[in-house]
Amino acid sequence: MDDAVRWTVRVSKETDVAVRTFLARRGMKKGDLAKFIEEAVRWRVLDQTVAEAKRRNAGASSKEINEAIDEALLAVRVERFGTARE
Image 1 (spheres, rainbow, N blue to C red):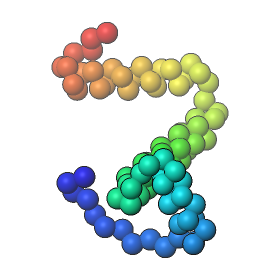
Image 2 (tube, rainbow, N blue to C red; image 1 turned 90 degrees about the vertical axis):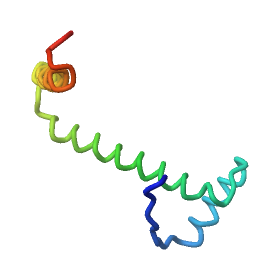
Image 3 (tube, rainbow, N blue to C red; image 1 turned 60 degrees about the vertical axis):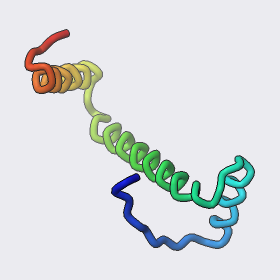
């Protein structure tokens, strides 16, 4: 985390105690709180991104989705390898 930034957040006392107790039971130290929060935030962002994609594609057929995936893969392969290799 070389390019780390500092956050100032407020949480309830109950949340603070619950998280610190959780970490302590797993042998984690005080400094591990930042790592835990970063991992939790990353998972939440991923979860929200997946939920958005599911909502956006709810009306699409599996054929349309597979075609879009194939098209995206082809574009990435061409960009990365200079060819549409399989």
